[in-house]
Image (cartoon, rainbow, N blue to C red; front, side):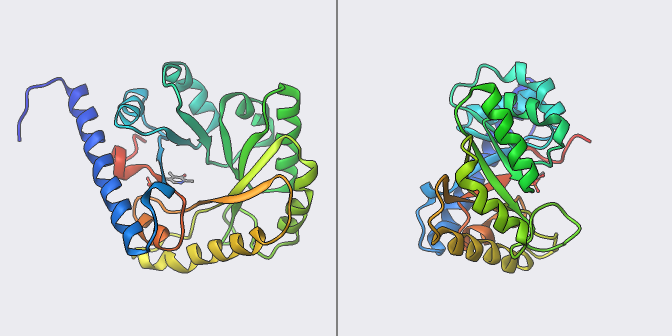
Length: 245
Ligand SMILES: *Cc1c(COP(=O)(O)O)cnc(C)c1O
């Protein structure tokens, strides 16, 4: 169909349409699994996307956003200052020299992949004087060369047992990125692994942790993730189209 409206309007319309479709698919997947769709947050992943598209997603009702890089978000942040209630989580790997900046910019950090990083973030939040920062521990459920702590690693255990003294962090749960498989079903065992890990951690009395957040599922596999218990799906390309770089 050919329309004659301004291109920016077309982009906003497309983004809104994509979000509406994804919401429908989230509902269907939740129903299949006997779950309440309201228990699943749709996080829009905005890496490489310009502020206009992020604003379009906000106008279509998105309040949870995920960004991968501190520098990139710092450059966009000013143009996004006018979005009340929007939260921006860091979901990409965080280098220790960018911890202060990340704490200043983000509402949450969902890519805590070492005890050392958790301690650094804790100290930065303390210095900043802000409220305890919501964080998620990134778990490597598959490929050992990728980021994240292995489910059975001593370091994960250390991090969890340190939680009560990390007073400036609020550990909300776990995040994972499964190895890529062509077929979304291929991701299921990794999602299941994360849920089982969460369930086993949740039975322990750890102050400062809630374990309600299970961040898993991306554009090509979010329905499988929801069937396996995801409470936050992180969707980039299915909302915004191919990334700009
Ligand atoms: C890019 C990214 C996503 C979104 O991926 P899509 O396939 O575009 O939906 C989700 N999570 C993380 C950690 C990412 O880096």
